[in-house]
Image (cartoon, rainbow, N blue to C red; front, side, top):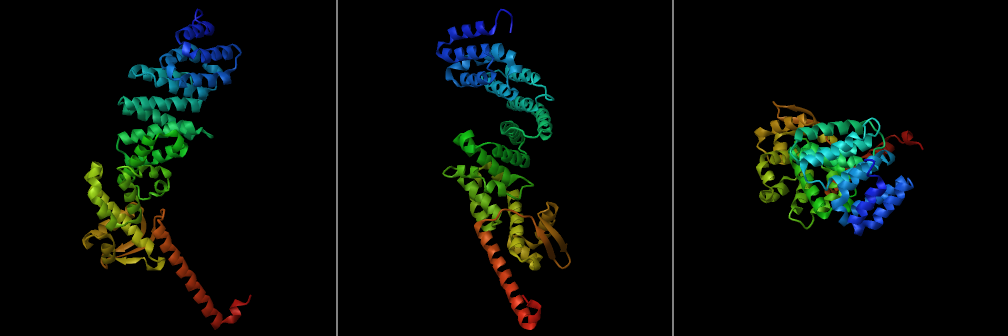
Length: 382
């Protein structure tokens, strides 16, 4: 700030131009003169929240806030900058404003504040089509946050939000799914997201879960309340489809397939989804069997997955390569011995089946105990 434009003169001038904000501006003046930096920061956010302040936010930040930045909490200063940046519609000015702010926050001294603003720089670059610049900034943020303990949820949320948007722009489903769920873990969807944002996030997560080439466990998404946002919307059938995949239910998959044209990207990837549901059906078929009955013929697998028997071997190889199952197969005898299946969240019906198996196991143990008791009572002395 120049010598001829000290805080008192600037704030008095601003008050004369914005009489509707004079109470807030007067508080800023008093708190600045008394060096009440914490209270001043709160008043600055009140100024930014006032609808009539939009035309003055950038000027206030550049002429009043930026010069006193070292006296403020640096993370709060970063959040002020992010909020003010929303008033800049010109791409070049928008990015330059944020870059200037990042330069005031050395990453070695203020890693959280640096990452908070840099995440917003990455988001701005993404909006303006600079994918390479976005990726560069995201990598810097990721390294900073990985090496810092006790990161504020708002900082992580900003990073995961732009990271998920980046991977969405690239149609990279698995990383989008991961970062989007991490974003939801850092916010309260009910208070931090609008109803429209919740529906869009749930929709995009559903699509990424279905089309992610390495996603075969939907558990975290199925349990997340964000999915409830799809109820009573044109996308409600996607929630049902996720549960169908989780159960590996090919019959229900085929009954929902006529709805795929509502989501052209699902229709385009129908062959992939058909293979995916077959893999999920294989996992479900293995899960339903007792551990000592997991040697299956290719014919049995073909019946479970509704595939021609000559495609079963390829399906098994795919499942083994994705580490969905472990075991071996005998191409000559056309049999597969499966020793392990990837764990996943169970539906009510699957839990009921598991409870039945546990009950049968307990009954078998009880029968063995009774048999031993009658044959050799001396072994069961209490």
